[in-house]
Image 1: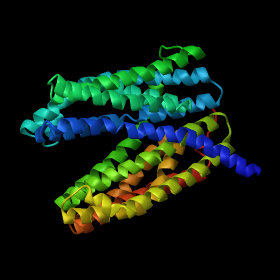
Image 2 (image 1 turned 120 degrees about the vertical axis):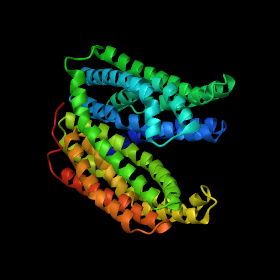
Image 3 (image 1 turned 30 degrees about the vertical axis):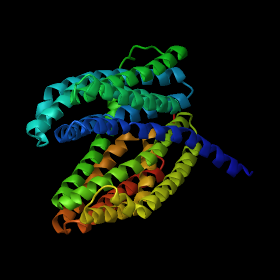
Image 4 (image 1 turned 180 degrees about the vertical axis):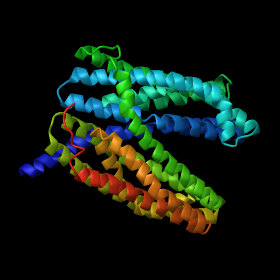
Length: 444
């Protein structure tokens, strides 16, 4: 085999070794909500509606803290690439301390503000009561959820995606058993579902923290936070928080516009968005591999290898996006049949999925580029790029709200704006950055 072919094969093995387990862990996490929904759904309509609101709030809180994983992955990978394993694990330990402190604060705030937060979403009566109960019983699990993020980020930086996979799968099984036992066996109702999830997340956090702590002890890294380490992690993570917030605002704006397009469009959007989210998990697995590998290469000062990883992961991302797009587009009609009895809603789902499918190769490009730049520690640029792309998307979204027809056609225009305009703006900003050299700063 020529040298070029051997190098490509080696890079492919590196990517897949990290991406496949990462995909498993990413898919395992949504099982928590699915299990909760299945268990609580048998309690009645009000508990299920309450769970929907409460889980949305929880996922928003945890989603905004994803910087704990991303920033830690990049920093740990760079230190490891520079040959400083003890320093890499010290960064991981600092991330755990930050996650624990932030988790305790958010748990207390969630418990105290639960009734207000639920009311702000428009919930009333028994639905509001059920949502508040779930939030308060699940709030103690927030430190565990954030520790899972930080520990997973550290392990990814150490190029270990198998341990988080094992913990995620085990957690999904334990969560299912606890939910059934507490909701029905102990007669706790929706409180049992929240408490079971909290206990599971705390156990998962403890298991992953134990792995990082063992590694830190073995390498001689202290378990106490380094001087300024927590503050440094927070400062590094803040730009990624801004980036994530810009993405969340774009998603929220899309929901607002879909609501304005009528019930048919909103119902269709729920399904299209769920399918898009599932595809995003697969593409995110490649982005996670890119984070760890590019960070390691730049930490080692190997810019040519970092660029080779950029090219190859982009090829994988576009190819995976195209494959997913073909599956979703070809199966759009069948997918619609499984989610609605209404002909109008099925038509909206089918049309929206076809538009989303066409843009999935572009999404693969965007997600991988995001991972590469996160791995390079280019968070400040990503924060500014996120704000710019949001600013580009806003007028197009409002134009759809003002001029698009209601129903299926309006949903198609909305997904053309989100999957086309918003993703293109992200592709252009990150693509131009990747063509230059400013992201390839080397060293730990």
